Image (cartoon, rainbow, N blue to C red):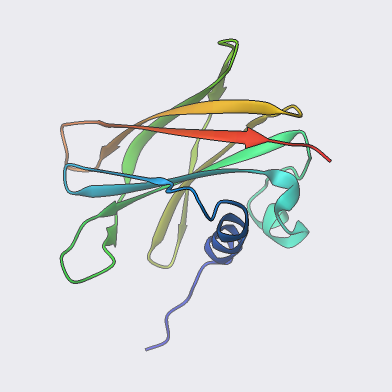
Length: 148
């Protein structure tokens, strides 16, 4: 049986590995691992951006979230969730982020874009309630953005 790996997953994994090697971008709680990353949309290939209706721009960022149920002896099982997110800059300006669900083969992602400016640090606040769970998981991510 051949496993189909999503284009966006591979692209984001490669980009994030290269740019965020030192950062641990996941939160573990209540038997789930929430993976969360933010990148400038300009780093996406034109093909990936087009396929997912994402505007490529050095002034836009992309938040990517996946929810994995921890299953011993495996890499886990992707699950659907109710996910909400917003970003705060260092002076407290809030950016709401509309997320949409992406499904490819067995992968489930939640993505949303937001404005960025040069030298800005954004602190992302996530609330994730996995399907079948009554307790939300709060997660945070901080990311610096630089525009060339």
